[in-house]
Image (cartoon, rainbow, N blue to C red; front, side, top):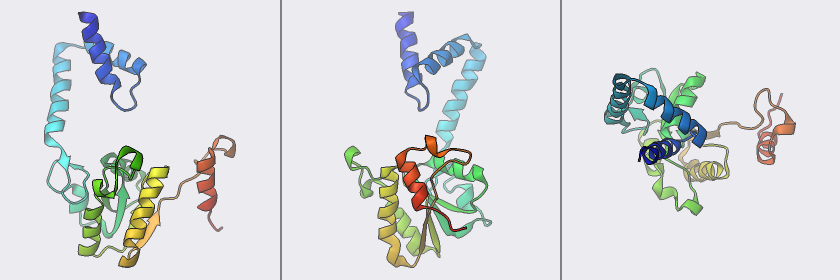
Length: 197
């Protein structure tokens, strides 16, 4: 019985992104070893976070309030919107320290094989923001995958007549990387996005 309970725990943990079976076993054993008080605090913290976080009514990012701090900030450039696939992408871009605009979360990408079309994404809301606000530039920061590129291209075609500049994050060879280890798709993208020196 204990074994089946343990396997259930491992199975739940390994369903988390980035947690393989081996890591799930290590985490499970660690959770079983910690004191009851510490375990209770961990569970309470997870529950509290889940109960108190929601999605921003404007950009779709995570927030404790109806509108997030980024959308509320007077210091952000409201004429520039960075379009991302998921709320967590905001954290990665913010951590770069290189962006001072606002964000718009699509909640996915166009993927016909998965039954996801433009109507399942937050594209209508993006168009509404462009129409309502003085938006000057849309930075498309979807992932450099076939689906991410297709989604960026779809949005670009949709808004090209709105007088808004559309840009795309550059992608290609990693800084410090070598051509030998780059896949064909990445190398092709790097060549197409080459810079004039």
